[in-house]
Image (cartoon, rainbow, N blue to C red; front, side, top):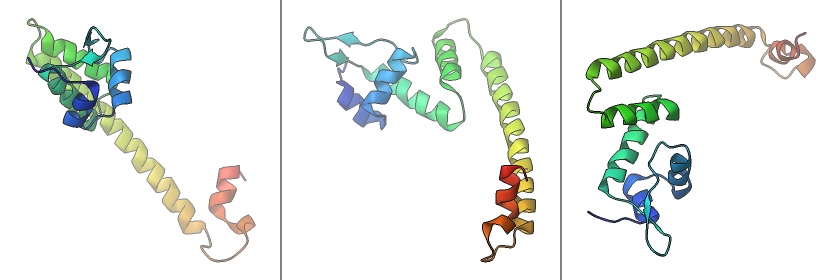
Length: 134
């Protein structure tokens, strides 16, 4: 099995060294073996795991959810239905965030519409006044 230092693992995955250490502390990644000199040693499976983590993050999964997905992927009893349920829950969560962002955008558009948008003093700015609750 290939043995990689933490620096080589970082280079191979595009993940920073401190981030790798953080993932270990959070138990997203397993604690690596160490050499007799105390250096962390990683294998190709760790490269796969880190790529998994990065891809899962790009889909909006939290580290807790990613840890759960990694545990499921290592479990011989797990099935696709369980993973699909997690993905659908994430989709519902994203839909909720999109609705909230849409509402925020609408409110900001109204504020921007009523703001004079010129060189009048800030006391006439509807956006600043709204933020102060005036």
